[in-house]
Image 1 (cartoon, rainbow, N blue to C red):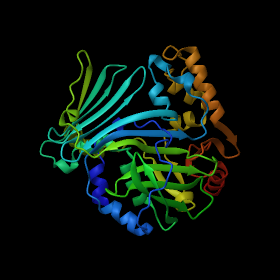
Image 2 (spheres, rainbow, N blue to C red):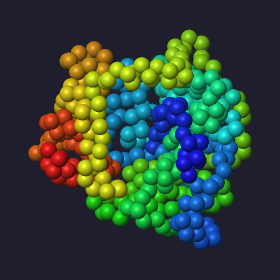
Image 3 (cartoon, rainbow, N blue to C red):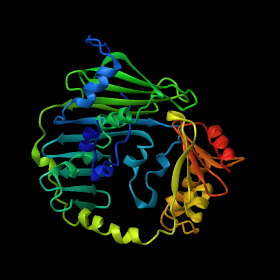
Length: 391
């Protein structure tokens, strides 16, 4: 399992910026007849399956209780429509993977495109944003093995890699069942359901749809106790082909006039010892202070005081994220953009006896006056109890 996860993880993965989130509308009406499998057999098949070449479209949808974000699509002069939909809305992600050649992911909106490309032979990766006509070129250390290359980066949020991580992270706190058969993107599939044993979590279940022939996960749905009738987070293939993608998809050349920032990962690694020798000004630490499994509450301590103060103040947080820099300068986003951000974070924040809390359907965060942060896939009330017990 760990080897499989290592194969699919990669430095450029962040690039996919992922996946904006769509409903699982491609699933067919009738459940296909398939041989019965136990949950253990299904998980084993997924873990042992060999990586396959594929291409298709991943539809991702999210509804985590955030207000309408459409007014924020043009903040700071950027066309952010495709990115705001990652938090609440719809985006389609085109993906292509050849385990022996590379990987590619692309998000297109009406105004901009985001592209991530990784190439095994070149041992490099590209991240490109058309709105700013800017690219980041990541190069791997000389002599690094291909298994550690960025070839898998663009698949970091495909259903396959997401399902692998969920299954690998599951513990005795989870019930596994094979609930039903279904059809995803025209493929017969099993549905593995992971249900938390502790009902104090905001997550009620996680469903993973697995191709009955290739054992590649084709969809992941995360269900919340706070939302009925639909998944709070869904990442699902709407179309897929197992034909080997054209190798040209894994080569990238920055367009004329593009600004290119090159990052040599080998050079970055060689700089680490010098950084380690000098003690950092702040050393944040994270530990679980309450609950177990899905209902765990983590505490983060040691944050810089100004960062903690910003997190605790919705207006400061809005100022920073709108480009005003937290000092009343609204030139970047303009007064309207600043007002939109303030309204957004003001609607998310709630003042509690233990500090300022932010909550969604899938998780909550609490920032205390002392500058400590408590977080988990639990209601705010659970964070308050944990904070009171760890003062």
